[in-house]
Image (tube, rainbow, N blue to C red):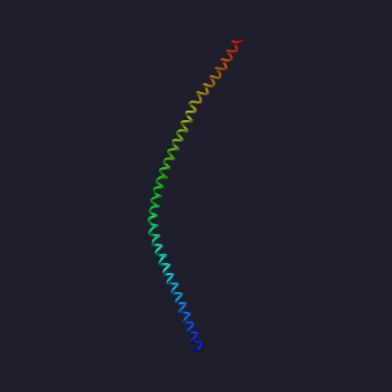
Length: 120
C-alpha cells in the first residue's frame, strides 16, 4: 500500500465520521424544532381564549370606571350644593346673631349705666 491509499482511507473515515455527527446534530435539531412547534401550537391554543377573556374583563372595567366617574361627578355636585347652602345659612344666621350680640352688649352697657346712676 502506498501513502496515497492510506491517506485516502483515513480521509474517507474522517468524512464518514464527520457526516455521522452532522446527521445526528441535524436529527436532534429536527426533534427540538418539532417540540418547539408543538409548544407554540399549545401556547397559541391557550393564549387566544385568555386574550378574549382579558378583552371582556377590560370592557367590564371600563364600564365600571364610567359608572364610578358618574358617581364622583354626582358627589362633587352634591358637595358644591352643600357648600353653597352652608354659606347661605351662615350668612343668614350669623348676621342676626351678630346684631343680637351687639344689641345685648349695648343693652347691658346701658343697664349698667342706669344702675350706676341710681346708686349715686
